[in-house]
Length: 350
Image (cartoon, rainbow, N blue to C red; front, side, top):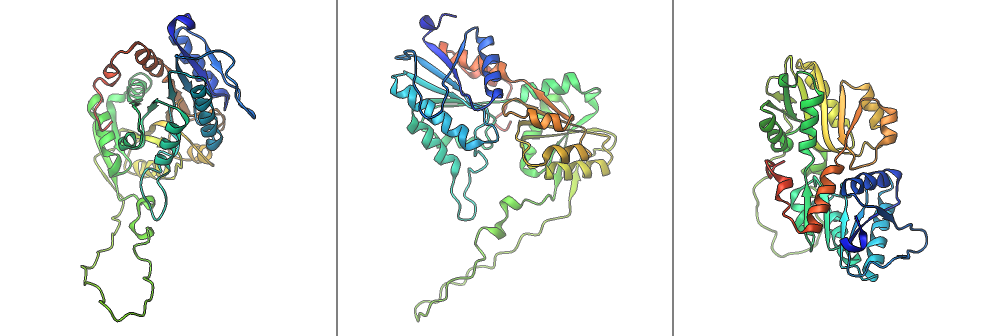
């Protein structure tokens, strides 16, 4: 495709080889070339981008903050070069788990959204945000694509006798996503109830901190009702998994402790094979070793996050390519076509 006539270009960040590889797959599908802005101490845009629509492809490797700064610098360099639209293609949006107020912490996801807008981005394409409400943090459009069609296709084509499978939510919070998969695959649904949710614990957010001692003779305060403490029930599996293939679905697999514990419970309840299906395979720390030593048979993730090193450490990890939907999103945005086609048969809860 002639770049000068088309009026748009695809730039690849140079944070990792995986980013360049994903950019090449996308541009091959779009039948055009991609460009790189190599960032060291400064960035110079060698060719004119005035009045053009620019797509910046940036995956997020382990060095998250370097990748974020690289994206910000690239966007600002293109903005000052008079690019018409600067669209970030960020398959995994970093800090997406930090989208709620916990303890006395900050909502880092909102901060990052503001930084991207200030740097010059006018639109982003991402995939499976941790919470759909994150889109409200942005002052520009966000296209939150879904990886579920690719993962469902993997289940249908790569899992023998998948009709004997059951979709499992590893916690009640993941039940809606699991239900969406179960309905499209015409399979049963099971939910693991009673799993410890330390990140959401009410006991750690400061509500039980002792009040400051004040010498006052004023009003002593109102008598509020006593707040009943939560009691975690014993872990149970709601649904029959005996003699079935258990498929646990989620959006992110990072710290695999919860998944390993869920797999052990499912094995005890009679599941003879256990799959994990997740969009973003962060797999930090010693996650590959824990997966290799666990009852999990296969972990399937997409290539939204680089994980080549983890795959070398653990043969159980498999990758599904989602570059096709990213390329189609770029093509539709450039041509001014509707994005609704990419969300057909996909529910809000997916």
